[in-house]
Image (cartoon, rainbow, N blue to C red):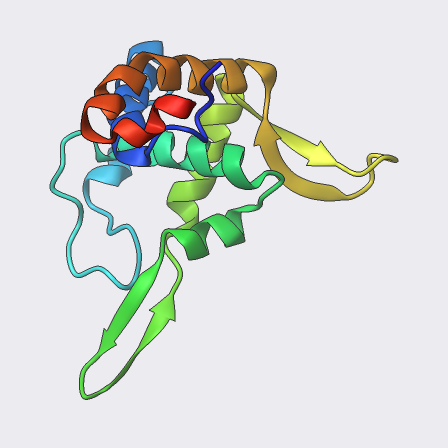
Length: 156
């Protein structure tokens, strides 16, 4: 069976974003029209479905790196900050965007909070069975398109 680990992200994310948008629980907030995705950006995103794409990317990253927290996710979505004549430095992406997306994914039942054995320490977020099923289903759906471009994926 094909899993989401076997399919490249550029094939997986657009289809996953469409499925999340059709779900109805992943909705772009009003304030998201005017925000940048991090301090390393100069302008807000111009894509119409950027919120759905970010939600799909966050869901995939949670599946790949679980348990993972908001701070590590924001570092993954960060980039180099232009400091003029000084050398660039790495900056994190917007934690508010990632936190809001994770809360929406939790309400949709795709992500859950992982704790230690006693339940006293939060380790981060991980996929639920529903989230795993959705990611693997989309990966199985887009595998034929990926095989056309990269025939080496046939072993999966």
